[in-house]
Length: 331
Image (cartoon, rainbow, N blue to C red; front, side):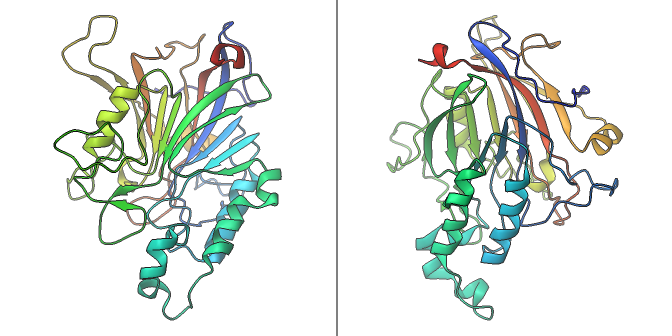
């Protein structure tokens, strides 16, 4: 059951090696603005929950128009967070320039071709930098917070090809793992192994985890699942499959405590009334909580899609209190 958070950020050092850090996680906002603060019927309302880090897992827009980028940038910029990390998704086609140059007429033949440089500049401008906004592409980055926490994040906007949208890869193309004879060899997004990554943020889900569509198809990526299990981050957040908003706590096979045969998956239950009232679904897995996350043995998986399958913004941001290593511990 999700528990009630305090009203302010929690930045206490929970051990000499870790710092309790609050994250606000959203995805698939599709350029929808925040609802008014007094609109209690929507959890996605002003202001976004206060956090140390805001994560947006992609699908910033519907079809990547400049106006849509500007609307979402305004939402992200307004968040009270020191660091705001953003990736694209398959709908953000103007951020996938080669794809857009070849396919723009499909969406923008009547409205006019969009300026891909302007779209990217919105997220990489000096205004964005001053607001703490960092646009991330496929790869690995490290950041240090004012609290002394330092973390490494793997990000990837790509998802398995579906109906010719942006940031796509073929289903047999393993972007995430070392090459094998059964997969192709493009490796621009190789995921490091445990214990190099604290957070993974991808647009799409891994296979079998918060990845089932309304037609009962598992749209998750098996290659990504292997990479997450090999990497074993503290947190893996994503979106893409709107109908699977939620969270799971996964204990991996071969964990130290002897659960060696298969992974254990626990669905995180939430109270809809409480979530609506507090405009967030909250989970505390830091040291001092009822059940601290065991790094290397467990990973918290979160599908943070704000839109439901009918593109209604009915879901809430996730807020997670999580231990991140200190700069000294990270080295």
